[in-house]
Length: 169
Image 1 (cartoon, rainbow, N blue to C red):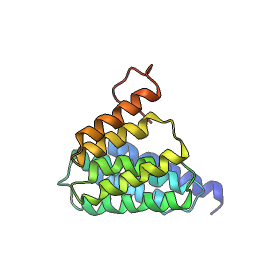
Image 2: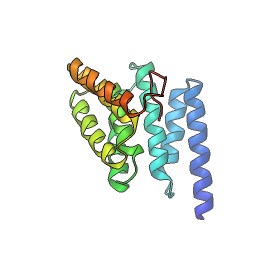
Image 3: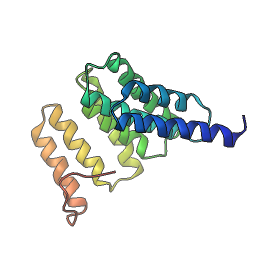
Image 4: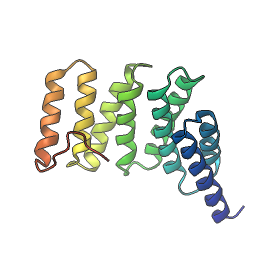
């Protein structure tokens, strides 16, 4: 297949997969996202990122879904590979850290991995509030409320004009 055909197939499967997730047809969504991730395109890492986000949503909504633990662990590992392949892209380590705040019940070491990923994200983009917001969540989940407060204060100090209490990325 030509590059354009591969990109079209991957994007089409990704679109269908995400739409299935929105409609809560998780099994169909997983199938389509796995099809999208299996296609070789220049955008593969971004498809993996979207897939990871969808699987995290599934984990949040339905931890009883068959095999969700393995799917989430695979998504986490895929994000680590995506970051390794593109180490200068802020979104990959940031997404790893954000995922860690959700999946840590599977393995608390995800919190350490998330914090290390935030260190890498901060080096790439040191003035992002979202980095400090997620750092506050991780510190809180690790049992460090004072550290969480300090991280949240840093997030606010980076841009006190932002009125939202939740930072978007």
